[in-house]
Length: 108
Image (cartoon, one colour):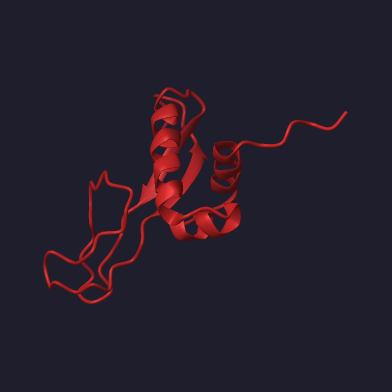
C-alpha cells in the first residue's frame, strides 16, 4: 500500500527541515503563490511553538545597501524598504526547522 501523499504544510515542513529557504523558494517548490506560502508558514510557526523536539527559525532580513539587520522581526514577509537608508534592496527572510536543544544543556 502506498503512503498517503503529503499535505502542502507537511511538504513545506519537510523542505524546511532539510535546508533554509525563502518564501519564494518554497512557493516554487510547491507551486503556490508566495502569499499563500507565507500564510502556511504562520500556521507552521504556531504549531511548532508547542513542539518539544523542533523549532521554527527565521533568519533576519538585511539591507543590501547599508547592512541594517531587521532584528526581532516577527512578520514573515520581506520588508519593503530599509528604515535607515530607505533602500528597497532588502533580502528576504529565510526559514528553517531545526531540532530543539535540550533545556539546561549548553554547548562547549
